[in-house]
Amino acid sequence: MSEETNNPERQRLEDLNIEEAAGRVTPPDLSKRILAAAERGAIDDAVTPISGAHSVPRSVRPPAGRRMTAALPRRNWQGAGIVVSAVLLFGLALLAFVVWKGPADKPAGRPDTAEQPKGVQPEAPGRTPKRSSSEESTEHEPEKRPEPDLQPQVEPEPREGTPEPEHPDDIVEQPKPESEPRQPEDVVEQPDPETKPAPEPEQPKETVEQPKPDDKSEVKPEAKLVAVASFSAEGSHGGDFGFAVSHLVRTADTEDWKGANTPEARGVKLDEERNVFWVMEGTQLKLGGQEVALTTGCQVYVAGEVSLQIDASGMHLELIERDIYVDNQHTNSTLRVTRGDFELLIGEGAAVIESTKSKLDIFCVEGEVSADGTIIPEGHLATLTNRGLSRIKEASRRDWFHPMVGAAPTRHLGIEEFDTEPSGNMISGRLEERTAEQLGGGKAGHVASDSGRDAAVAFRFDGDHATLRGESVRVRYRASGAQKLILQMFCPARNDNFGIDLEPAKAGEWHVLEIKLSDLRDRVSHKDAPPPGTVLSSFTLALTGQDDAQLEVDWVELVREPRYGE
Image (cartoon, rainbow, N blue to C red; front, side):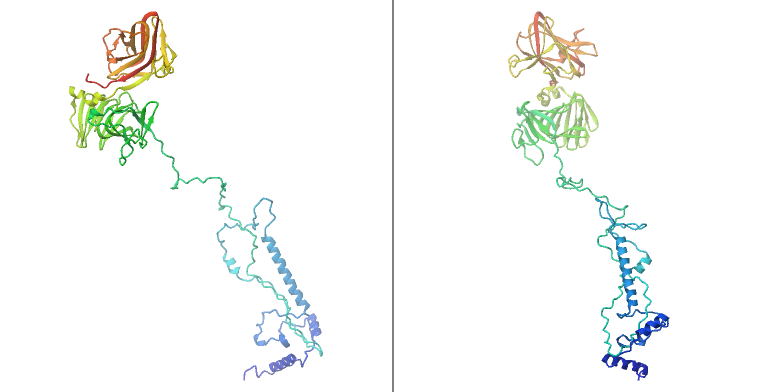
């Protein structure tokens, strides 16, 4: 038999419990005795066995020194008061915590922010705050609060007729503290002021988002077309070089040639007022003997195929096929001519260039030409091949009558039409209006006019003019009452004029006078002509005649005829 079975005291208590449960025995009412003993302090800390439903076997009681909170009967007002006080204190503590952690009064217009305790750095959004080891150790432990110093009460034995006490279902349980106080839902954590990102301004709905620099969908402005040359819309010379071509253009090797005057043509634009085609950069031309005027002032006579570009060095002409004549004098620019790997530089010079697949034949007509780093002087020829530049030799008389030189058209160096005051100012005469009928057809305009026995029309050039070989001066004039005409041009270096005396044409009619500068003579010895390169600064056309003589000048033009063999 076990120790529990041989314990008479335990058996007596169990029998008593059974009798009480069956209602045959009523425990005595000991409440008065217990309260009196409590007032005298006669009750010690020993755990007293409780009879009835609240008895606790001694074998399962907690060890000495550790207390256990027992269930309180309804009549134990002292224990109930302690429990209620503990609940109230906990509620006040929880209310104080909510007020402390809750949102403070906010001024109107400010965003909701939670007041942070002093000395606590606010956390940046999205970051997990670091906790100390002491905080981590206590984070999940319930808060230890002092337990009330209560002793289990001994249920007094009920008297005869006293009803059995009910099971205390309405016992108030002491609330357990939460492992960690919950943070109110409306508390907003503040980001770190140092790491707070700057808010991006909201774009209005009407704002069109601008493409980023690296966005592939960025819309780029179209490149503007640049005119680099022009040629007459009247037609080409054609058959002089064995083939007839009229103004064929294209913008790439893969395109078919199109007539410049067709709607399909690309790279050219018709100027109806001047009756010329403007050639855009990158356009290829196929002409059968046609003058092309570059915007730099250079004149190119094309009997073949060329392409025009502008690069870092200036104007660039690519000779694709056949021959060209280049007159680049009096332009203050350098023209670069290429044919495959061959390259020529033409500064103040004129040259004939004939091309084949393997060589370039170069004839320097005037000035000088640079080929393969070597200067070809005026009046000399050379051939450029893959092996370099051949021996330079002097041109023969037959070379000077080269068809490209003879076929090259007149080059217009400058013109004064008197529609406005000349840039260099008038020296003599005045500007007057004339109707189209008075000007002999065409359209109305202005003339420079003077009257009297010594009438003269004179003006200064817009800057000094250096003469060229083959240069001439053209004048459209009308005179009446004149006996002699004097045409002269002033040379500042000699402080004198180069001029010529002329017989006047039929009085009252318009005439075009053309004089080669090589026919002018100085006014002192009447022997010296102005050599090429002579600087002239002004023009004068005068007459001598009757007192009522009158002189009118419609325009004055300087031109160059490239026929050096005559």
